[in-house]
Image 1 (cartoon, helix red, strand yellow):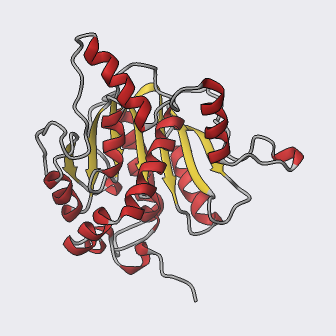
Image 2: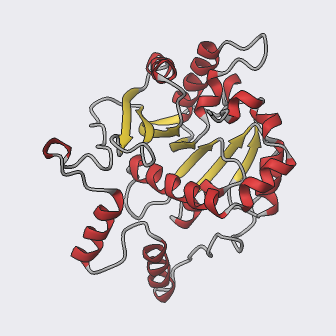
Length: 278
């Protein structure tokens, strides 16, 4: 028996009501999944080392993905259509500025505002026509056009998403390219039903190579390396915490504190409160 996808049950602003928003944010399973997906998106954005970037988190929800950005010393703005999700994010005192909007109507930011953009499990919602006036191709194009304008040239946008079928992948990718982006699909662990994850990696400038998916390093020889095996090998080889891991971030912050440099507090629940707009 197939499980109905969330986007088939109700529009996102209705599906993620107060009850669903709190249940989603209190689930240890969902927290872990969001953390892993956000860390992977951050890796695919390939941001400059030791540089605090200004990032747009699209479909930020209750701020679980944004906390990963904060932990890596980035500043971010989160947008979401669910008032309930943003309310929970505000209660959790996440560091990002929060904006309530329907991304299918366009983002409305000034040109060249952001260094990068990320989105976790959100873009597929635009493939649904929740109202008679909704045209998925038009809404996707409106969204991608406004995003392209809001990003600095040479930057990246990374979308982790759960397409329902190949037609959705084609529709989303086609409208992104029509809006001016280059790039394509990066698939992690393509041979695994459970671990397979899809990322649309978009560039605002040409000439950038598309990253390789995890679990594909030795696919030609039939000896696929899993994500966990890859991380373990790197850790053993270097004899130090994995880059971008929690321990790596904590060690980096401790070094900055010893040097007398201004350092962000841990973001889990003790982050500095920023003004929220919604």
